Image (cartoon, rainbow, N blue to C red; front, side, top):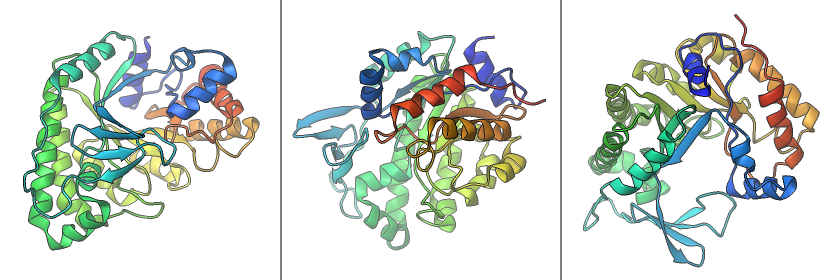
Length: 337
């Protein structure tokens, strides 16, 4: 059984011989691991079951600033991470004005899809990050977005519809290749509850998620959704929308026993190993014990992809990354019948 076949079996909520895993590292943590191990191909040698490509592209403006394809300017020099913080929002007021939404970069998308399809034994995922709410606030600012959900709802809907239109055009190109999954990234949660509240999420985001999910599924691809934080209010909606994979699944936010019982037959959980409380602070032995606990719960009858809850940041000791990989590769128990 190939890694791809094993992931698909897990997504079908069937017992699997081992739990599929994915090692997710920020650029800073990857560089640390390369230096620590002396292996310039450390990530490639992790032999993760997933192959991923991201839709983002950037133009280097100098001085640590980069402009993405939507015209958003990011400063990558002010905080650790692969994106940084937004310095220029292209639509500062509640009107489009002269702003023109981009067309997908077809040549670049095809190049990335070809890289994915060159790995036929992996489960391939094309990632459309900042796919809805996040793209909205990168264009308009978080504060103005939250205010205008209430004060300028027609403007908000216009922008969201343009974002959905762009995303669906990307999916149309990706679907021309044998890609397994489209993975939407869009943070909705805080540590407690949704940033915008459930009524606004349901009014503005849910119908557009349905359009994007349905479009992906019309091509017989799986749908994955990333959101950090506490999104417990929307899990019944995500099941209704037909979501296949939910990432990231934070054990400090969710009761993993309860959520596996309630939603584990419908949604595959992707994540579960805390980058907030476990990987940065615990000993390698404690990391391993927590991994086994999470795997025993979430891995029952498939429906789980073992991974950190987010790309591992640079504050995680190399010994704990190695502990993660030792469990993922060498101490991976059989899923329970």
